[in-house]
Length: 441
Ligand code: ZN
Image (tube, rainbow, N blue to C red; front, side, top):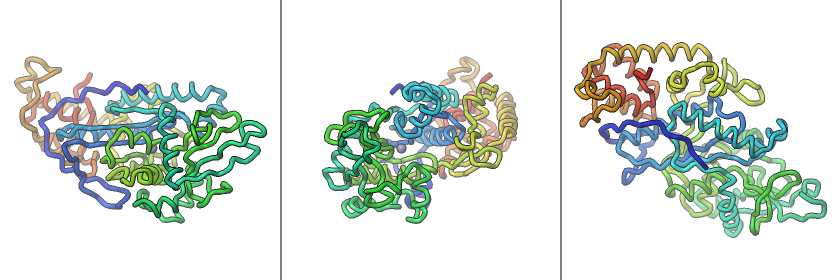
């Protein structure tokens, strides 16, 4: 599907990548290699309803730092993101609000694009919906059935699409079979214990009670056609629609190398989503899905968890409509480390705006470089990295430490760092690495 328009990213003289990231699977900081100067990234996208709340924005803005870090290190970026434009929560919301699920998905996806563009998030090179990927999902689920790591569970008679219909059944992933035939083991990605997973599974869309499953945690791969639900041709699987985890596995396997560099998403995706997306891919081809699994913290509101059920979601579009500058929203997000769970308050917008204003004041008194005198908008790129670039790059190198990078900007603004760097170079450096546009009226 159509992506959004990326912001301009000034090219900086490349600094050597020396990245360490906290990998959930190994529960440690790991050096992240980018062989042949290519970094590949998959960040799980939205299910398009209630988009884009601050938790979504927090995830995408922080992974945007990884893209920017690689670009500023001379690393080519292959970035893929999906949109789960068919799934139970979307259908439930469409039914509850009496809108067509396709209209809901399209409207919310469009709002998401606008929010991402407003927040200066670099667009993924491939932005794919679940619906447009269904033929490939069918291929992969058929393969998992052939490999003996997926099995059918009969659809209860009462749920059959038509009276007397005998559908082929839902298809589930067989955890035990996958463990014995592939390097993946349950818990090896999300790093949870079995009791923790049993607690999380029903809270996050799983169906441990479903009769006929071999393991309560076996996840759904293909849901056979039901009365009143949209469905697609599933070839040998029968008509139906895809499960959630297989969608990302299929998209990543077709658009990124195996394994790709970083799988990202919110920490609520550790299990079951990332666990099983990786399991499906490894069961299909024997290869790990990714080399590193990164998880962004959750954002609450005024001290409590932000959730649809509590009705306390803070939407980026609503903040923008109320007059909040997207650059200020971006700064608020970057004031927290990506792994941190934190709680939003309106006061954060006020303090971030003041911080931005201090940086802009400092910019006005930074020296004018020779290039600035001729063409302030597009000054010639510097041939050597400046001191501020080293400082920001270094902060991001250690697990994308955005708060430390902003502290370096404060140091510069107070006159303790990089005082010889020209206005134009400061603007280019901060815009490229942090996506913050200083000096923009
Ligand atoms: Zn995903």
